[in-house]
Length: 173
Ligand SMILES: CC(C)(COP(=O)(O)OP(=O)(O)OC[C@H]1O[C@@H](n2cnc3c(N)ncnc32)[C@H](O)[C@@H]1OP(=O)(O)O)[C@@H](O)C(=O)NCCC(=O)NCCS
Image (cartoon, rainbow, N blue to C red; front, side, top):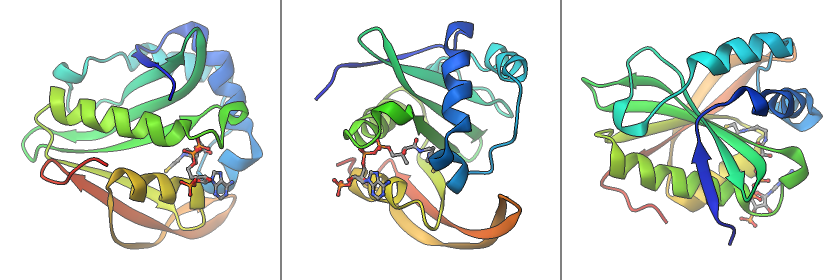
């Protein structure tokens, strides 16, 4: 198992993140727009966050380091302090895929979320054909709640997504 560090978004990570977002596998299952590096940079500059100081209406992002190499990113969105809920997403560097890193990153991040925030319910939405991502969620302890019919447009087509959740009272496995 690798030793992972979750760090603030930094402009130095943007070129790699931009490349990951161009990757065929990522675009197959996610509604990724064609963005210029400068647009991602502008986003990254707004997304700095501490888990203990989440803000409503903001996207909070971290990049994941394995040693000195950046291997992925995770983000919290739709944080609702009143409902103590949020959604989250993740993206693993394509050259690191299939090594179990996605599972390790999600597991470690979820534990941290429940430890450092008051969030009780975390959700993730996944393209119905994103088998690797669905496996990660199930392995970590997320529960399938249902299908979001024709939820998003991916490559010009409306597609079903699946809704998964994990509660503070569930065990992260
Ligand atoms: C989906 C993604 C997170 C998977 O990350 P990863 O590091 O390759 O995942 P893991 O190595 O932990 O593999 C998880 C499981 O999926 C399987 N898997 C990996 N790639 C697969 C593929 N292309 N097709 C089917 N299964 C796959 C693995 O064998 C593993 O299964 P196992 O637990 O039975 O051994 C990564 O490919 C990614 O970031 N994709 C683009 C962004 C994205 O889709 N994010 C998720 C949005 S909800």
